[in-house]
Image (tube, rainbow, N blue to C red; front, side):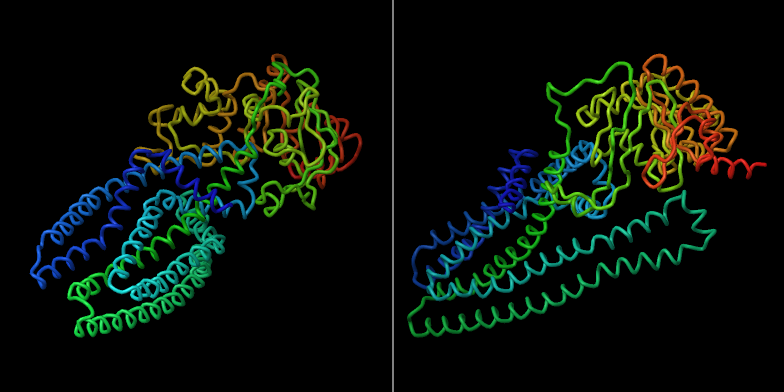
Length: 604
């Protein structure tokens, strides 16, 4: 049933992308393959007419008609096929981007098995346009019927030649399919090798790689990864090549025997010269039909695998896309209570669980344990703790990149899981340590922080000032109209700190957020610049507290930064170990006080 759904998706996608051209291609493909053997029949009828002294008209007419129709069909098949393939590829590629963007969670980005599936879809996207191969299989089927009819017209036993030809054809198809499976099974090696290749050619990594002398070592790892992927493929290719060759030898022997036998029949007067000429001419058609089945069947099986992954992604997207209804609660214009973690447990789903749609098996290891915490409306809250403690996981739950395993995150008492994720994210302003380097025009790179106002130059200019990025923009040759990225003509490269300042400016584009997330957003800046940024954030947080009751969340390792927060939350091993103001936590003499003293001692 799954295979039928996948096949239907392929066919229906072709007709959605290019309905008229797909119908024409169906007709031309079937005509080309079905009429090719008729050419041999026309020649044999003409030969028979010459030997018997009868009219040449039937044979010549059939030959001319088949050549004319197949010639026209062949001349149309190439351009139409290329156009249909391109339209299907564009349709599917656009749909793939839409599907991955519609999923509200980021689970499909963070697990190896899901990454393999997405990588295979991207790598094999060209196969999604190969509808002509499927049509060629259908056409080959009509060609087989024609060939069988011609062989039976000579002698029924000769139909066995087609069976002999299909044996190596099926072996070849199985070989192509097996190699496709091996590519899939070893995709992790290709991803590793490709990732290393990307790192080696990425300018931002170039200095460190050369200073550490890593290039040769990385090349060796990449080579081993590609070798690990290709070795099984090469072995399988050799195996099926030998089996296919043996099959074709068997067909050749059978065909030669049939020709000798029919010559004997003709010599004894039990077969005509036309019969002999038809068998001689149709031998190539038997081989060509079988090879067409072999080549296209293998490709079709691989393409069906790719469409199967595409269908899986469509199902995954439907299952994980938010569908609002009339009962969905609306967001408040202003927070009054705040944001509460209501006895939240969270575990990252395993790749196996996430890959199986509908599997609700609970993952084993919890990253957060019974987090019960109120972030008051209008407050500035800091999450502190050692690496891996769970700070960024809390941020992901606040942004609703995941839902809790147990418990709930509540916005003024309303479960966040019941609120439209897109509507919630439109009320979030965020700056991250792992920021995006958007190689657009500078104004666009900042303006996408609020898509509704990206063309508003005054808003963009104000965000640049708030994000302490004025000096960066002033140094650019065309200011906000400068193309960023050295891979573009006239593009300008930026340092890590400059990119981070633009990312900070992006975070200031939204003017009415309910939540401001700042997850180590100044990691690439010097202390003086960091202090200026956080001073600006403090002013913005106070202004937002008055207008929208927004909660500002800071994640930082620098205690000089977090001491400005109204509430400091110490996270340890996925639990809230301490909570209070800077003065309260120092007075308590707990882990926060120890870490603060360690940092303060380093600056004395």
